[in-house]
Length: 262
Image (cartoon, rainbow, N blue to C red):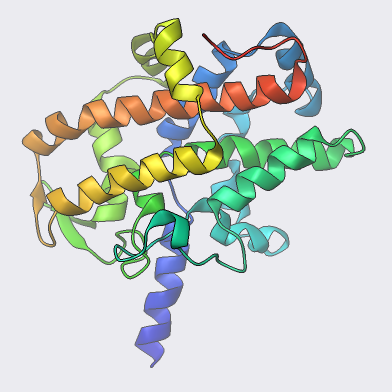
């Protein structure tokens, strides 16, 4: 019984981890490049001059602090394969979709205090990155891939960790600004397609990618060069989607003159 509860604790701890620091930084930096001047001024004011990149990974640590423990389930939405996305039961403690929606509502409310707006902004920046990590929309029965043991080359790991850091870090040895420079090249039409829809639509899209991952990766599999080559385009696409969508959300909140890309 002690081992059982230890497993549950470890799984819950691991699920609060998401894209490696690089992934969250890339998402936030791409978003910063697409803020309108009005939105940028509002964000700078709320974050007291610090960038979104500065806060991009903050929630992974904060969720393990007592005063922020209520956010532990806000990093993911786990759905078992026999449940359609629309029919998945809601976690009473919240999930990534309800968390993002709640932060948007807080930032839209003109009565929100500065400190509450800053907290909502930090959570939103992080969770929009998490929303695009496939295993954060993975299966409940394996804790988003945490219990699927695999190898990355000769190192023991699991499917969740492979998507958190192993694949993204192996894809390109770039800084977050170099990632932005190389992948942030969508045409206006492509950008319009990316930002269209709702938070639920974006979550459902990531859930579908997670389904592809489960079909491809198998317990005990050794992930090597072929897998890096196959999945790098997906990582690039998800980083870009996260960044453009975060910018779109913030522009929609803070700039009355903003119109979606056409």
